[in-house]
Length: 327
Length: 77
Image (cartoon, rainbow over all chains, first blue to last red; front, side, top):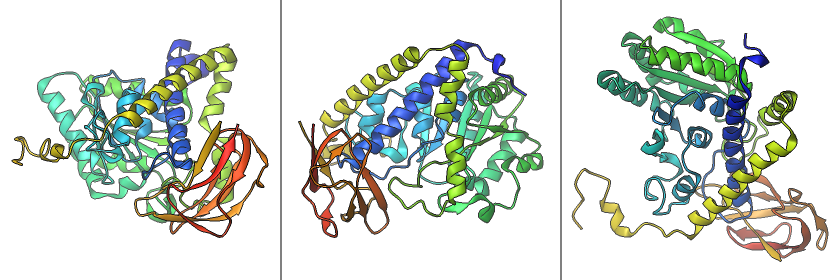
């Protein structure tokens, strides 16, 4: 089992920086929604920051990511520029998809964010396709696909795991088990005791880890990346975490028992991470400087998004088919 | 500075919401993050927090329905 001494302080700080970029982005979205400055369906990622940061810090910028509509933590942790992300979320022409993708379809090949899907489970076969391309071309890239515990009950999960294992694809299946598939508790929808119990059926390496523990999560991620890069095939990672807010922002959350909400609070990865860094000799001023820099970057990103124009109506004819559709 | 407090649009189909309760009295001091009022709509129930610290000036009334985007209060700071 990983110990606190297993990661150097620079790597830990890098994971912390990525975690805080996610935390502050998520927080800003919720503030903007609450104050009525933004209107969109928002899927909060509070509580899942660290697992994404620890995973993405194990990747190169040109490695691939496939995620879902609850994926802003994955996108930000992967390194997507905040101003481009905010512009896309707000439907502006300066966004990563010229404002035509929106939050459901954040895509930024420059940072390896290849697809965000609005369909639960749909990302897994797409990730296989990206990994197959890398395998064929020998570009050395690794693909990570993020999904939730609910998606593991979708047929595409099983088909994708089977072929990825058979073909030894350089892909990592990162199941973020936040214990609720939308409004359905894990035990009410999933027969397997753990998601990793599915892996032996596909002869796949699998590991379950506390996703809220930056060190344990990062070490598991590094091992999976090394396996994929060495051509030794895929890994199924089941990262345990909690979704600390409702399925969509503002949605009723009372179906989650009070004890579990309390448990989630105790396991909140952000204060735990701060305590870990303090133990490792990082002072409060250093952490504050990191947060202030991200805050300033966010201010600029939000301002840029709000002041950018919406795409022209003519944009409807472009980026649909290979050729521009006639007016 | 006056900061507008608007009815948030929280879902694709949400057009209006009801202020069910004010948690801070008109003219009361608020800190950033204090719960100002509870908003209910068809699918959501949300405690709306103060985005900044200051003095709350209520415009909207408890029990009334407001369109998304409607200004229901100011925080003067």
